[in-house]
Length: 413
Image (tube, rainbow, N blue to C red; front, side, top):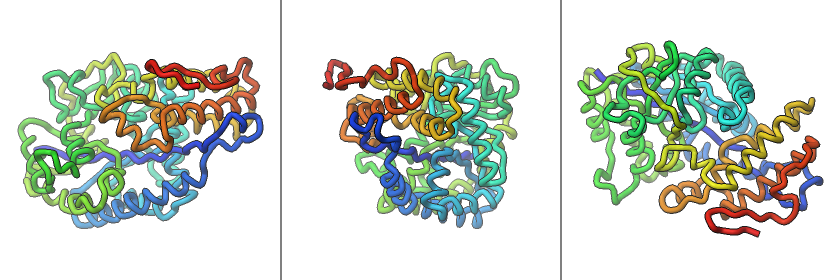
C-alpha cells in the first residue's frame, strides 16, 4: 500500500513600511499595518476561505482523508486581528480530528542558525499559541522553509518532538527514494519525512504551465502517478505552500476543481490511504538513516540557504540583527523585544535576494519592494532605530550615514 501525506505551510509576515533614514530616532512604527491587513484579506479571499471550505467538504465526504498544516505564529496573529473568519475556518478543520498542526518557529525565523536559545523560545511560544487557539499540542516539527541538517534534528528531538520534515533532495538521498520514512542521523527515535519534490512541484509550480508536457494536470492523472508508487514506497509526501490553492495557482486554472476530485482519485486504488505527518511516522519503520551535514531547504534550485543568505546585504543584515538581539533581550521592554522578533522573520532577507532567472522571478513575485536594495535600505533603517532604542554601542554601521553596499559587482549609494 501507499499512504499520501499532504502537508501545507501557511505563513504571512509582518511586512515593513518604507522606513527612511529620516525616520530613525523619530518613529518606532516599522511595519506597514495597512498593507499587511490588505494582503491577509486578499489571500483569505483567494485561498484560505475557499480552500478551507473545499477541505472541510472533503473531510466530511471521505472519512479516510487527512491533511497536515503548519501555520506560523505571525500568520495566526494576523488572522486573529484582521481575518477572524479565516482563523475560525482553520479551527473548524482541526476540530474534525483529521487535521494535524505542526510546531515551528513563531516568527518563521532563521533563529536556529544564529541563536539556539531564541530558537527554543520561539518554538515554545508557537506551541503555546497553537494550544490556546486550537486545543492541540504539536508532536511533529518543521523548521522555517524546511531548513534542516543533522544538528537541527538533534535539537528537535531534545525539545521532545517525534518527527521532523525536510526536503527530499537528490544530493542527500542519492539512490534512495523520498517515498519512505527515514531516521535522522545522530538521533534516537526521531523520524524524518522527506518531501517528494517532483510530485509536489508538479502541483505547486507546474499546474498552470501550458508549456509543460503534462499540462493539463487532472486529478485522475495525478492519482495514477501516486498509485504507481505502490510496491516502490510507503508514503508520498506532498509538501507545499497552502497558497498554491487560489493565490499562486488562480481559481481559473482549475486548481480548486482538482482539489475537489483529488481524494477520490487517490482512494480509487484499494491499497491507498491518507495519513497525517505523525501517523506516517508512527505507522512505518525507518527504512534507513539519512546523514545531512550541510543545511538544506526547499527553496530555489540550490535547495540551500542562499535564498536568505546568498549575498553581502543579507549576511550583513542578519548578523547585525542577532548582534543587536543580545542587547534587546537583556532589557525589560516587551514592545522592543516584539519589534526585534518580527524583524527576525526570514521573509525580510528573502526580499534582499539578488538571484536571476527563474529563482529571481519567484523572489520578485513575493517581494513588496521594487528591488532587493530597497528591501535592504528599509530593513537597515528600521534596525538602526531599534539599535538606538536598545542603546547598542556602535549600532548598525551599515546605514550610519548615506547607504552604500557592494553586491555582486553592483554599488548602491
